[in-house]
Length: 267
Length: 302
Image (cartoon, rainbow over all chains, first blue to last red):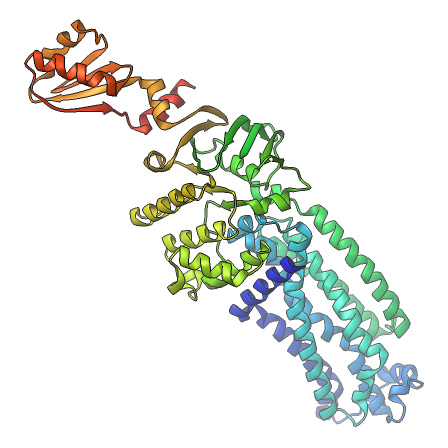
């Protein structure tokens, strides 16, 4: 554990020296926050129409009629609550997608900078190396997610109808932000680090890592179309599954990490 | 003691290291010489526990190196890689501190302070590695290699690309390791450096072509010779020496080169014979062909 912390601390110090690396993630987070505000608040105000008058959102009103968090809200407030809840998925996962480049570059970057061989010559085990690399991109991603969530809640409290922000503190919303988000991020970043330890070019790692955004986008679309809902029990089930996936990914990552090949074949 | 026993490494069909064996004792500086692609770095990586041998065995301090104990035994080895491999954005102190923690040193800060003092880097401790000259980077890399006081020190081309002053500093540091009774193995192309620091030399071309002290290798290839510089043409005295029993005597300008069994024992007799023959002697020295000649001759014989 000491060695993981030592390397993690180095990873974070390295990132602090190069904050520009997180500009894409911060921008992605910012636009993820902005998007639901455009849909739920700016567009209706500019168009002079209420969302609750649109037939497109009747499904939301129907679906949320019995939700305790929206009880007491008028139809417009209920639609806003629905929109802000749906976009939580995007909010949680986009900073992770932004951190993907950091994770994808983690091992191949050390190799290209010729810092990997001295590192491998220490007592550091493969598990410790991979754990530190994954945490090195996960910790900033989670901090960024937390900051984005704070901004999101603040924005909803300020600009949405009174009481809408309560919808962001339901077990479902909190489960998405504080359980599903970190677990999904861990899985995605582990996958990116695995890829980084197998390819011999940082660009390949980034391109393959970028594919991870596809299931995230699919999840959002399915939610918005109502074909799949992340209810609290579903979130718990998915969290269990992600826990399993993370364990498997770590084992696979260790098995795939071939020190010899990295040292002797990568140029 | 560091022991390599019939060490072999294949990469597919290519035999990179073939049946290499040696024992190194504390206080020894062993130089591994060889052309590019001879297997020097592969040998060092195997000794550092970074890659597995295809055959043969390695033991460090009597303990066989295996995949299960490699992480632990790596803490007894310091490996200076071909390039310094510093994290450029981090400062010197931070670079060393991470390694002190990775090696599990009980007081990492104190160990780093000691290393900074030992390598005279205290004043540059807060400088980012990216701002250091190549020589200073190499010095930091050496400090990192020795931070955990390893018994075995493996140095892969430690002076490659350094200016003469920096190279001299590195050589002095290596010699200091000898006095600290560490086992040092240096891979290098620099024959002058080998001459200055190595107690033993191994010539590697996949397999060990030769291994001995520089003096013994010279003697084996060129024999022991005494060189006498005269103030007149030397050819006049060749027959005098042959008549005196020094049958392998040659001349070159005003110099005589005489094959002997023991230079120190033979020199007075040679001087006496030449003086009696009327020669005006300027200097008498043991002939020492450059190590480069030894190296090239050994590789030619292969």
